[in-house]
Amino acid sequence: MFGDTTRAILHYGSRAQGRITSPDSAFDFFVIVDRYTDAYRSLRSRVGTNRGGLAVALAYILPPNATALRHETADGERELKCIIISMRHFQRECSSRARDHFVRGRLSQSIVLAWTRDPESSAAVSRSVQEIRDGSFTWVRVFLPAQFTVAQYCHTLLDVSLHHEIRPESEGHARRLFVAQEPALLRIYGDVLTRLHRAGVIERHGEVFAQKTPGSIARLRVHAYFRWSKLRTSLRLLKHPLLYDGWLDYLLQKIDRSTGVKIELTSRERRWPLIFLWPRAWRYLRTRPQQRH
Image (cartoon, rainbow, N blue to C red; front, side):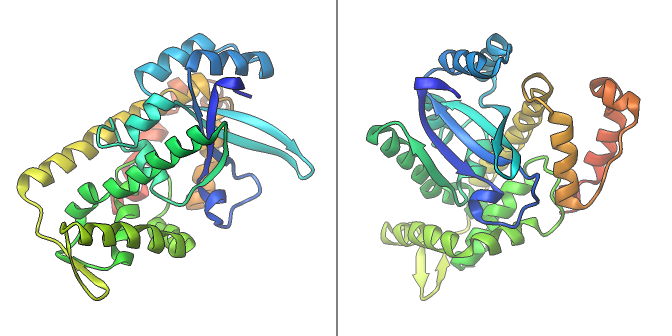
């Protein structure tokens, strides 16, 4: 769909993790490209979207963009949620120079490298994903006790990432994520903590790791990072009506699947959601699961 500029495709989210999903649950992908202009030009020629110029501009202002594609299968139509990001932006957002937690929060979990253009692209993407995982200690440690296990580390990582985004999931979602990915997460972050121990960053006593209590400067830096990240994530949601076909139905279905809350819109709210949906959205945000964390 995105042409020769595509470098790699990463499959993430509930289906990649093997979690039980409903039939209408979307397939989630990161599409890593060389150039946004070429990617959207190819998309326009193949599916007829006319949002290329706007999408390219928004990709540079606040990357990445999300777009919806439909794929026909023997079981019916499937929705593909594609996060489009350039290799340059991807490498930055996987590193300590990340502007927010959007990419790190998703790719710190179990993922599948579904396709790469060449060995060089495969190696570059794999290095960046590993950089996310190796660098997770810099922010997870602020929320950990002085002593912790690998399982505590993994659960804290998931809990903190979810808590600092505006998401519809019900309470206990971090625990469900951990259970679904437990073997993979224990292996991934067991290796990360073992390397930190060998480097002298943390201590180890059997199955328990120990750290020095982070100082106030480190805590302030991490909390400021997450506050800024939450603001950028909120602004990123405003791009959906401009770039994501069927964004309103997608959002309502996600809330229904995640919380069991079925929202019925009035004809006026559905026709002009950006004008009349704000009061309902404000009520939901005030009572969303993260507010009761």
